[in-house]
Length: 320
Image 1 (cartoon, rainbow, N blue to C red):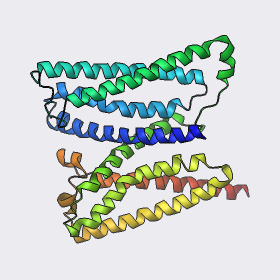
Image 2 (cartoon, rainbow, N blue to C red):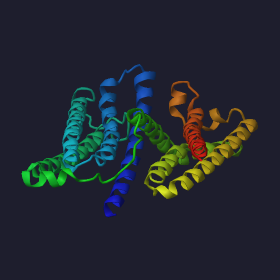
Image 3 (cartoon, rainbow, N blue to C red):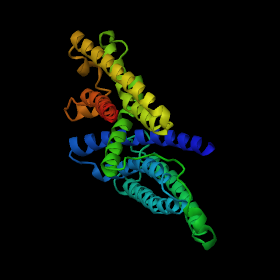
Image 4 (cartoon, rainbow, N blue to C red):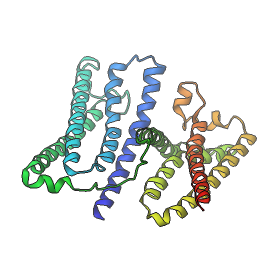
C-alpha cells in the first residue's frame, strides 16, 4: 500500500514537471524554431533537450514499474538513466560553451528566463545527479539479483503497478495513450497559467474564459478517471463505474459546449480579445486551433467510451 502511495505521489510530481516541459518545449519550438526560422537554434536546442528530460523520465517511470520482474526493471533503468545522464551532460557542456562563445562570458543572458543560461545549467546538474544516483543503485541491484541465489526468486516478482492492456492492438493503444498524455500535459500547464492570465476586468468574455480554463484541465481529469479509476476497480464494480463516468462526462461536455456557444453569441471576437494568453502558439503561428483541440480531446474519449459501452450492451443481449 505504501508503494502505491509513493507511486501515485511520484506520478503527480513527474506529471506536473512534464507539463511544464511539454508546454515550454512546444512554445519555444514554434516561436524560436518555426516562426523565427531557427535563428537561435544553437541556444534553443539544448534548452529543448532539457525540457524533454522530465517527459522522458515520466514515461520511463510509468512503464518501467510495469515490467514483469525486478531484473527487467533495473535493466531498463540502467539503459534509460544512462541516456538521460548523457543528455544532461550534453546540455551542461553545450550551455557552458554558449556562455563563453555566444554570450561572451556572460552567465545570465535572459533569453528564456531571467537567469538563463545559468539556471538551465543548474537544472541539468541537478538532473544529472538524480540520474547518476538512480543508475548507481540500479547497477548495484542488477548485479545483486543476477547472482544465482536470487535470480529465480526475483524473476517471479509481479510488477508494482499492474495495468490490464487490451490483448489485441497493444502498440496502437500505447501510441494513442502517449499522444493523448502529451496533449493533456500541455493543456494542463496552459490551464495553470491561464488562472493568472484571465482578463477578469473584461466581464463580457469571462464566461468563455472560464469554459476554456475548465477545458484545459478536462484531458487530465479524463486520464485520472480512466487510469486511476476504471482500470484499478474490481471487476464487479467496473460496469457501474463505466456507465456513471460516461453519463457524467457526456453531460459535462454538452454543458460546456452550450456555454461556449452562448459566449460566441455574446461576443464572436472573445477568442482574439481574451484568449491570446491561453493559446500562445496559435497566435505565434497565426492559427486558431486551441479551442477546437480542447473540445476534441474531451469529445473523442467520450465517443469511444459510448461506442464500447454500446457494443458490450449489444453483445450481452445477443448472448441472452
